[in-house]
Image (cartoon, rainbow, N blue to C red; front, side, top):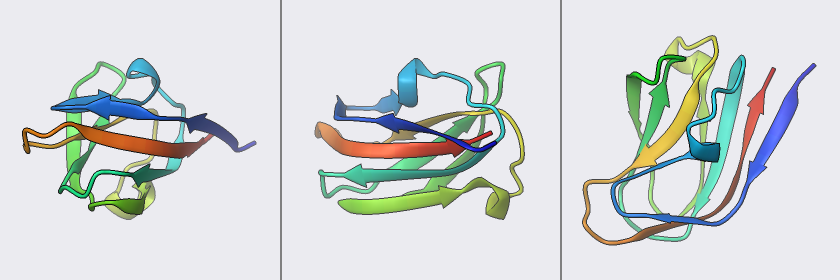
Length: 98
C-alpha cells in the first residue's frame, strides 16, 4: 500500500534532507515546491547514507522526481543541494513510497 509523507517549509544554504535524512521504503516519487529561484539538485542516498545519484532539479515552482525513470527501485533518503551561496527556501512537498 502506497503512503505519502508531507513535508513543510525549510531553508538551507548547502543541503537539506527530507525528515532529517529519513529512509523511505520503496520510494516512488517526490514532489517539491521551491520558493527561491535558483538552480538546485536532487540528492538520493542509500540506506547507508551514501549519495548514489544526483539529478538536476529546477528553479522556483513545483518539481517532481520519479525514481524508477532513473533506474532507482528501493529504500532511499531524499535531499536537495545547491552550490549557490544564497539561502534557499522550500515551501512544501510530498514523498510517495511503499
